[in-house]
Every structure is written in C-alpha cells, then in structure tokens.
Amino acid sequence: MDDCATCDTAGVPSAGSLPWDIDATTKALIQRVRAGRMRELRHDVPLDDMVALLESDQHYTISSFMECLDCGRVLAWQLCIRGNPILRHADVEEVDRWRWSPVPPRERWARS
Image (spheres, rainbow, N blue to C red):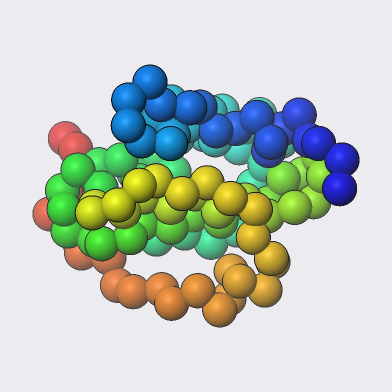
C-alpha cells in the first residue's frame, strides 16, 4: 500500500523513552477527525477524553479505532497505564473482535 499523508503521519515521535508523544499524537488524531480526514469507528472514550482516562489509572488499556477517509485503512491508537502507547494500522475486523471492557463512569476520571 502507498504511504498516506493523513494516517501515516499522525504519530508524533516522543522526545523521551516512549515511542509516541501521547498528547501530541492524540491532538494530531483529533485534528484529522475534526478536519474530516478520519472518523472514529469505535472507542472506549472519544479521542478528547483518552488522556484524562489514562491519567486517572482507572482503565488499563484505552483504545480508539479510526478510519482514514483518504486511504480507507483503520488506525488503532491505544494507551496503556503500564505500557507504551501503540499506534498501528489494524484490520477493520479487529474493531469488532477487540475485547472491549467497561469504562468507569466519566465523573470519576474526567477533567473539570
């Protein structure tokens, strides 16, 4: 598959030990969704809430699957409280196969 200027450039490398800068990559994905270049297919919480939920330590792996509207591929953005953030292309079937787990009520972890 050819490189895609939309989804292949969404990840912002970290200056530290993590592979991806969590805040900057999340913001890049939000910008692409708002610009109509990607759309959220399924998620634990919307992209806007992923970092707050991660920081609360109340959900082990926070997942969001997005479709790139420029190339049609699916991108997975996953934040883990005890691991590295993961940004990767996924098969569309994985969205339904993913083991989704309940998220604590928003009022317990959301920023004011």
